[in-house]
Image (cartoon, rainbow, N blue to C red):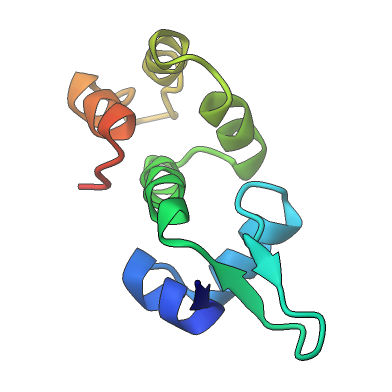
Length: 105
């Protein structure tokens, strides 16, 4: 188990972002120490953190990220293909592939 600070460094996300993702239900800590209230994360959560980070960089709203992460891979890829932003091209197959594999970049 890792503290929020250690997980933040390993995931490449700020502590503030992790707290936001916890509050939104996207990435709750694996455990919370009752004595200290420290948030503890597991190494197994790094993959989900990378996927969230990738989708945020693609401009996806937090509310939509939760929906996409809960879809089967094929549906998630279709959803990404429809997630174009004004004046931007929709995320391509490369980004969808990275999402499925859990690679942020």
